[in-house]
Length: 247
Image (cartoon, rainbow, N blue to C red; front, top):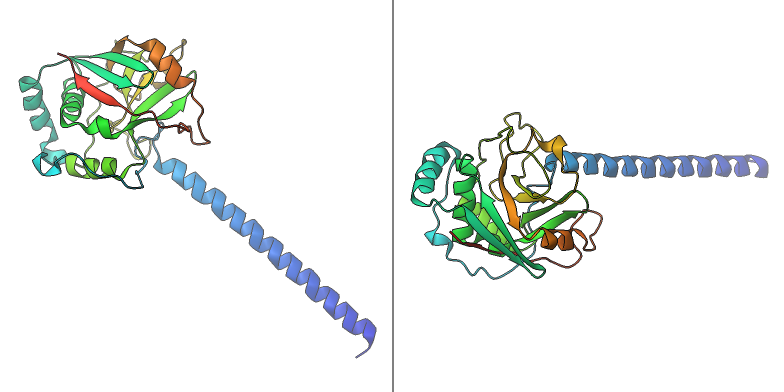
């Protein structure tokens, strides 16, 4: 075999390798993009169900908590709401307090939120998503405690209680939800968001249940909205929540 033929063969082999490597890289890149698209689909519009990770010592006795199923949710919350009629809640953060009034004509959402406050669920969570000039969202964390709490409380969704008289104006207190396969617009029981934008977020009016409003503390919401966040809008420094029922 002549040197010219050997050189040509090596050159063709090299080109083929480069082409194969380029194809592999392209396929890997497309796969990564596809996985990211699928992840966004699994998340809610407001990332309601990001599964916590990491570890933390559980301080709550989970054995005392009743685990709810979807089938028993409505009668349970209706009875719970009668026995627990409170409507005023205080959410404390390192930036100050936010006082929220819950609406009585969104009874399932009100009862569920009051129950979670009394159980201490929100004390295991953060304001975990911040979108300045839009919303701040709370009720999740990257602590194992939060994940265990959710599992014990139950895997259910709250039927929507969307009421046209309650809109996503500034200070609206609303429920996050799944966006995929959720034609009923049912709410996540664990996560809420507060509209921070001066213009409101009225494109959400027919998709999310507004079940309360901020009475005091929008300056605190503004401070939360101004914190540094990562690419997923998760605050760089955790914003812990302490929630209590006032009356």
